[in-house]
Length: 265
Image: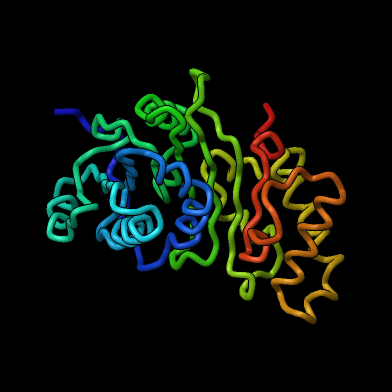
């Protein structure tokens, strides 16, 4: 039996808390997952109650089809036992950690997990998961608030490279409750949150976003959504390499390359 790698986390969870990430995941990965004979998606560290794992399984089952399996992994054996009654044909629960219980997953969603670790553990944890990914597989390392209104996540794609490294950062928020884009800084993943300081790329990006938001304040007359879209559009005009289009921006979402925000030594 594979020995779980990692620590038991607090286990906080709530219905619909990870809906923003799930929506992005389906947009990004539906075609790839649909093409696989048997796709395995792991929800790592689902917490004290498996509600978000069940939601992920249902959303993927409805979008991708029957040939997909979602596996909730927890280090705490009591949490696993409590989740077993919620299993379905396309959903199961097992004990495991960053070693992914020995499975070769096509997607790993690790939300609000590494946030509870020291930053020094992040790369090692990425690497452990990365080594168990199927070719082309994806790790999502993210953080969100208690009800999922504000989220941020990194996408790490399995490539020919031996070292795990993010490809992008996504910010996603409920626009009606947003004061300014840099309010999302408190939800940055562990690899970035301590680097939101003057002189660091992620700080420069958020400050530029705040300026674009302020310049486009008149668009607020038509709602926060229009103001957000106009602010992202201005960033693009100013040379920020934003990934995606206005359909994604209209959801209160923006994705940028990791190279734009990666910490400097």
